[in-house]
Image (cartoon, rainbow, N blue to C red; front, side, top):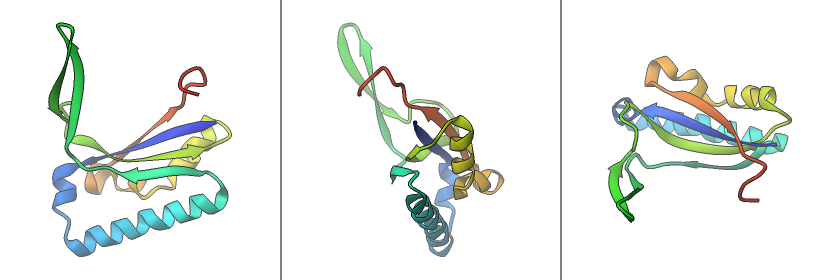
Length: 121
């Protein structure tokens, strides 16, 4: 089953990293992705820019607003699509990502969501 792993982070803390600290973090994430690819669990993954646009219906029209949509310090900073046997396996896989270990230091957290088997096949 496929799962979407969303990595949330604190933009201000991330922007406060030195170039060397940021490069070390990127290297850890790349190593994680390479190991996940070897295991066959990696489907796709991408880092995201902090800025976003939100589309909402308003009065029969589509209106855009600057995002991120939610008002929070944590924003989605990256996503990985994984293949896992079940939710427990997805949790195990996601727990190996560096973002799972940077919660206190950089305000990171991970959300795991299964893909719906009934939509967009």
